View (cartoon, each protein chain N blue to C red):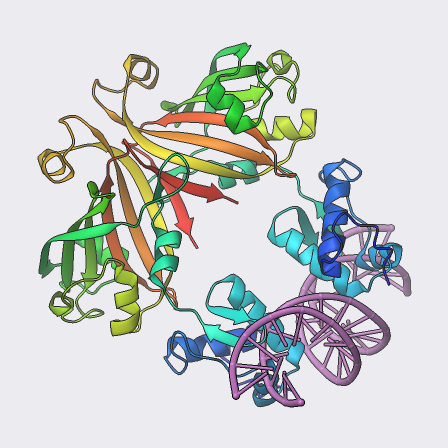
Length: 242
Length: 242
DNA sequence: AAGTGGTCTAGACCACGAG
DNA sequence: TCGTGGTCTAGACCACTTG
């Protein structure tokens, strides 16, 4: 029934529909926050039944690519500040609540990527990266020392974005069209160094969480590498395993 | 159409079906690993359409309560050793691979629950808890010092289970009918104490990950509290945020 | 009132697994 | 060959949002 000029043949129809819609979103045909055509319109355009479109959209909802609201329609997901924080900022106190973090930028700079950065961000040899270093505060106390590494090719002239917002992911989305939906984190324990002691105001010899995060764009490319060093005397990293 | 004697009325049919099936599983009517009736049989028994049963089972599949295999049927989830490790053991090396851990039991004991344990495990005042203390090794090197806290009421005479298996969750399931599907973890960084230095063979002043895990049974009750202290010089805690 | 997504049904055919 | 879940369709009605 369908045209079947999709990238992947021999796939269930609803998977093809899903990939078609995903491609349109990734290419910016539908921007974050915008309203998609209704199920019936899409079904008509693509020559499949409404139920098949629904199954594709249901999976995209589960993956948080779109948001569906009864009576209103289906929308491309948007990073609100709250969503980004709730999803990616995992520090909270013993009751599981976290005051809204604020940020103090320490430095913004640029240099050639290290080999490790090249590998993790899938950069060409010798590419330039931007570095953002900042301290994040909870209840006005410094808690996290954070270093963000971005490809200058993906995020041109990011240093000029002033002031940098507290949640960078909303900036990536609004200024660079990059939606971050997933990330991998790698957590170790380290002893605070001199810089940590100064900026986080912790005693010599303190233990810190070191979190290395690689964040992925909606199309699956790694786009941001972020190192966080966190004091955990007031807050802890909380996660659900499901 | 349906009998509608379900616990929650005014719910979509497929939610009622799901809760009905879940109840049967929780009560042990269908044991882990056993085959459920086919979609059509269930639909007939419950007086709903096959598509409604499918939607309920699809959600239960997403929640890992059941496993579906084309051509064979739908089975109640079973903890295999591999699944339990893959799901709940988050330590791996830089390449993301983890050698199979082994365990050395340090002690098994029993005492009255602390107030903190009572609160977290939802115990009555003064209940007894069992404590299992063990060191877990990766590639024959001690990596984790682990303390497991269990209600003696839920897990009677667990000390007699000898030898304790490497993956306790399979024991909970086979001996006590407790299936653990989800957990919450709370991670902080601590400085190694004397005991850590001895048992994990780390130098004085080392930083360790301290992981507090509260694991939940299939019916949502908290059933196990586990404290882990991990060296992260060879391995790191790895997690995906989705 | 009109349009949207949410639920529910019924029936068709396909792909897989086991006897 | 048979029974299973997996896919796909078509149509009905409901619940919610907007004008």
